[in-house]
Length: 464
Image (cartoon, rainbow, N blue to C red; front, side, top):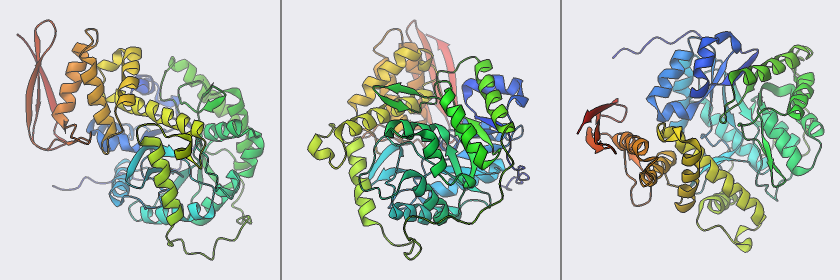
């Protein structure tokens, strides 16, 4: 079959954009001029053909930035080349002007953590990122790769650099510019008890090529960048500080949950535009600044056994049941580990519920049930969100209010996936699937799928 022609590359990014989410689609499509570009989560396009088709369609309206969350550029064990290949293919398909990923790891040892975990601030960690970036570039198109700073919920005691110097080391070693998440920076400053402006000015702001802003909330004395609350005034003030040095680079508003009327988001976009208009012109590139310790003598391909061991330990602390004791958590604080585990459990629910669109119409009840399910079951080794969604749908069938929606959602998942297996994992279903379920009230729903994991699933409903 002939390969479809590639689209012409998108023009350079500018202005203010937003993360494209199904809840925002109707408002954005009815007023496409509300934003200048959109960002999509790359992994959503890997797991859903519908999401990929949607991304391809919206790329005809706006420039689309694929944003990766699972490449694990900070893993001492290296990246998965297949993930990089799929990310590169998506970038070419969307004619993406840039692509972004995180300075973080999501895998340690043989465990998948499931969410972005910050690295120790060391030269060794920066070298690992540089090595993995070089490997990823072999699969990516010739477009800028922007690296995003991570929020810290668990700090490594062996960090030898301050946060700003670490990211200066990152840009020096990789040659990449930064996607500066101002919300993450603000959260790190507040939680470390330092001045957010001072922390921002310690970053290599002249190497910032794009910015994320988002809202958060303080819980039990800890500030979380939730992506589900309005952008607070201190974050907008920090945005102005960054743009005063970086110039008017593209800004993206992240909103992933608790969506308000679109007018409220439009107001936040307008505020970001006003701040960008007041920024001075972007300065010319400057010579790299001196780093606090020499790092160029070591090979970026050198192994990092200490970091690999530390990451395997962290992954076990965050994913293995039961929660670790204070002695087992060392050298980390057990309360920090408990907080990080709770964040990961919340993230598992957030990842699973979009796979249950009918059940999620009962938002609060589904979220409470999901929290109980992920607490009771360890993280699956593969396709965790699908495995969790299956568990949640199965549990929801015992609730008369939720059963009709849960039965249909679970039937659709079973049409696409096989499992859970003994280890809790699931795998794509390659063979055809035909099955029916009887709903309360007597209706019967059939699910039919053809050969191949990407085949469409049809639902048919009959009486009796």
